[in-house]
Length: 103
View 1 (tube, rainbow, N blue to C red):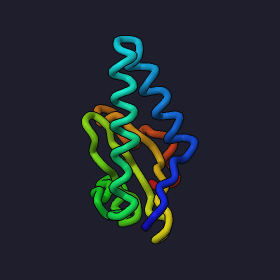
View 2 (view 1 turned 180 degrees about the vertical axis):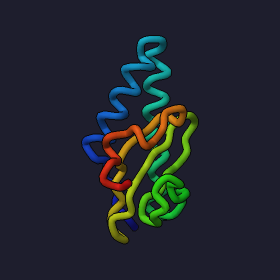
View 3 (view 1 turned 90 degrees about the vertical axis):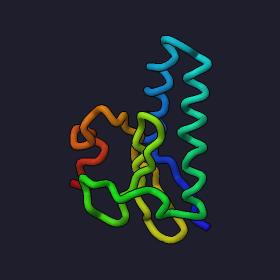
């Protein structure tokens, strides 16, 4: 079983998403963040559950599509999965500075 680790950058992404949604609905912001956070639990038992990120073509960089968001993660090893970023699907992933080292 792998341990899912949220990077500081990914947690910051969640915080920004919550703040944006909260302007219209505090309740929906909580629901969305919980959904995004909880959706990564599948990776503990199935690290390859997400698809390979097309922009990277690297088997270790994968993503879960959750609603309007791409939860990008790296399979570091059999015991660890790093959540790298949570990215809105309408934006280009190549514009995300958190992922520059993977291009």
